[in-house]
Length: 59
Image 1 (cartoon, rainbow, N blue to C red):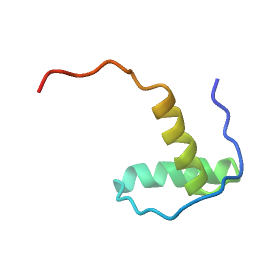
Image 2 (cartoon, rainbow, N blue to C red):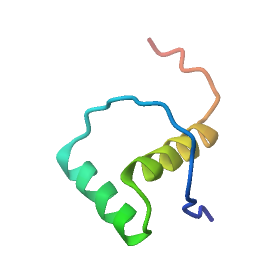
Image 3 (cartoon, rainbow, N blue to C red):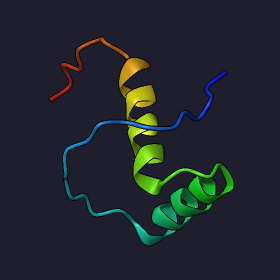
Image 4 (spheres, one colour):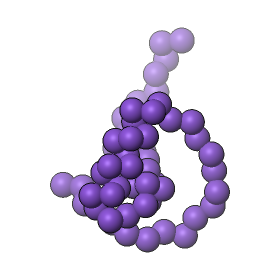
């Protein structure tokens, strides 16, 4: 099971998120006493590490 971690070195990037998703991220981060940025980093890492590596040739 995935566990939320604390602390990262970082570089600044900007992303636009749907308001509902941003609110969910903020609430989850608050409940786990970490920043929204740290939570987004962990979510992205989890998604990338669990990405299906098969190439989609349906273009």
